[in-house]
Length: 304
Image (cartoon, rainbow, N blue to C red; front, side):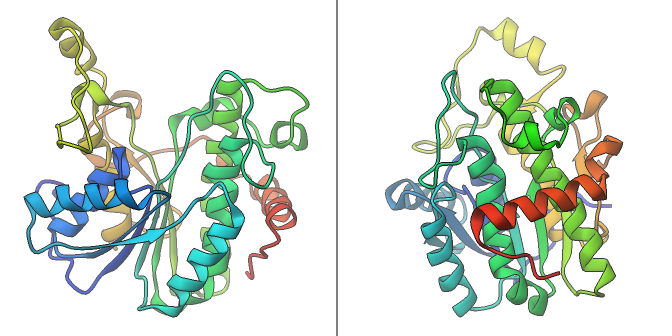
């Protein structure tokens, strides 16, 4: 049985984690590196990444963690990172974790896309599509960070490029795009007998107030003790929220096209396991339209 508190030895694995300097991504990096994986922490800011790497070394002095600059909200940065990674040693796992939750007012990426769709989906789409030949050669596990919010969104031409902006709707749509792309990628990999695997994982309801502190990286957000006790009945910390991501990228018993999340009520918290997903997230027709649009917007073709 897979135990998130006692990971198997991961020596020989080289795993790329986007957004690894904070939140879920940091704890995924810490857990992976602590088990012996060589971790590439891909994020925008070098200073924050180095601070996160020092925090990992404080707990695991022999951990192998390196920094790769990557700004998913800037396609030129994605291209540069793709070229650097493709020229390096084989990447055996890609954890597409980075993401943003938008603000009350609409914001855009460097290329003019709505920030949440542009970062959460389009940036990762361009990264994965660009690295796909190398990932295929390595038989890599490709994991994308979904969200239970996908349940309340639909993929339509108007939802992907709406005429008006609503923050919660934009976030849910971006996460449905992430999820649908992950499943459609899995379907196409299987059709081509690819050695690579695509899985979607989500962290449930992960809160800062329940998260273990890491000085300089993950501060324990103060809240009244009664509130922490109440929230702990339906939520978990980001350290535990990283478990489904880590399992999905390392456990080869998790099959291509699977959906991994917490085992508890409403998939909010608990041990990482295979969980059901809403049927519309596996709509191949809608996902294919999404991929066509993503290729047109980013200029990067998914060669599958």
